[in-house]
Amino acid sequence: VSIISMINYVKAQYNGDPARVFATGSSSGGMMTQHMLAMYPDVFAAGASFMGVPFGCFRHAADYAPGSSQCTGGQMNRTPQQWGDLVRQADAGFTGTRPRIQLWHGTNDTLVPYSLLQESVEQWTAVFGLSQTPTSTDAIRSGWNRQSFADSTGVVRVEAISVQGAGHALPQAGQAIAALQFFGTAV
Image (cartoon, rainbow, N blue to C red; front, side, top):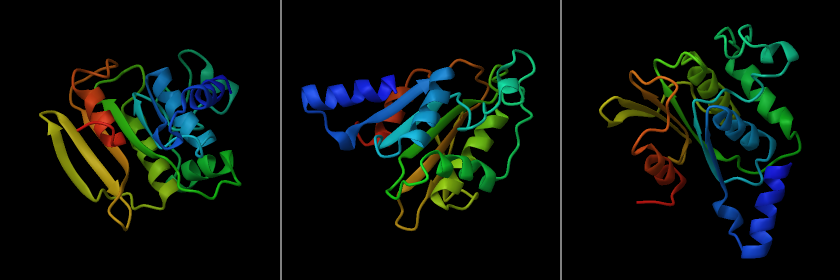
């Protein structure tokens, strides 16, 4: 609620453009990014989550227990439908277009397991009703392998970037500009 209050304040006080509100963060901030897009789809245009987890991964008190969390312990495995339902239920009355999302994860992340990138992909592609098969794949840079999931009009709704060999240390140089390009705010 405090984040939304700050956004509303900036929009009101500084004539902020509501169509250009974005969320981004790394680690717990990446988790919060996915949370904010799920809870407040009417506020955000897009988000970039670095080393985050799918919305609803931390649903129960046991998921927060250090060393025994199913979520960050890498044992969380739901179907795309189950993941997508969590987002859809977060704001059940929402009928607009949901915010696009870019997901980043290092393949050697031991704090927030790399397997959670796939769970996030499953969640957000299900939310958009997209196939689990990417519409395109490429390398943004050497070792930055991107999967894009576009809708029927060609708009990329979900983008997942695996950073080869990276641990829990994102973003790295050049990744912020890639996120801004995804948002449509940088060239």
